[in-house]
Amino acid sequence: MLVAKNIEFHYIKDQSFIIPDISLNQGEQLLILGKSGSGKTTILNILGGLLKPIMGEILIGGTSLYQLNGASLDKFRGKNIGIIFQKPHILSPLTVEENLQLANFFSGANGGKNEILLKDLGIFDKRKAKVNTLSEGEAQRVSIARALANSPKVILADEPTASLDDDNAEKVVKLLKEQAEKFNAVLIIVTHDQRVKNHISNQITIGGEV
Ligand SMILES: Nc1ncnc2c1ncn2[C@@H]1O[C@H](COP(=O)(O)OP(=O)(O)OP(=O)(O)O)[C@@H](O)[C@H]1O
Image (cartoon, rainbow, N blue to C red):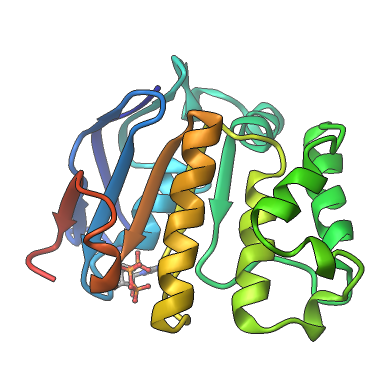
């Protein structure tokens, strides 16, 4: 389902990131651990079609991501990849449900799953609330709901627990796992948060011990 092979990347010449080959079948999960600055966000962006590597190939369901041109890549991403960013990419002046509708609009989905998703994530009661009135944990769940709104085949999460207390961190990881299992999607979490370590056994570490 998701294959990354021979990936090389650098922002500055001679400072290359070593990115291990990855091969995950539908429904498989992977934790990428690494210290701050080790390149976790960079890898996630490469896997998610947001940052073209200098060398190598990313295949999602057999499609080579960076062979697609701008508009086709955007469309493919919207349909197949859900990214939960480190800083929630949700629009604060909009309500919870409007944020999901926006994701549906951009990928051409009909939004039929929004209600069940909000219920699963425990924010259905907040659907009419503006995001800027929510707690940090609730806002994080909205950003998860938004990333999952189109039932993506690949879910990528960048430090999803970084700003959460122990209880909420555990809840968020469990929710991500549950949702990935429900959609039979690939789930990749990148983090330096040791609390996540026990939840996903398939792990790789980049840039030395965390
Ligand atoms: N656009 C950029 N231009 C140049 N260097 C960059 C750019 N983005 C990131 N870097 C550098 O690349 C390295 C890896 O950054 P990245 O954000 O991928 O690390 P990270 O492991 O996600 O860090 P953190 O856990 O702190 O978020 C860092 O040294 C960073 O300063």
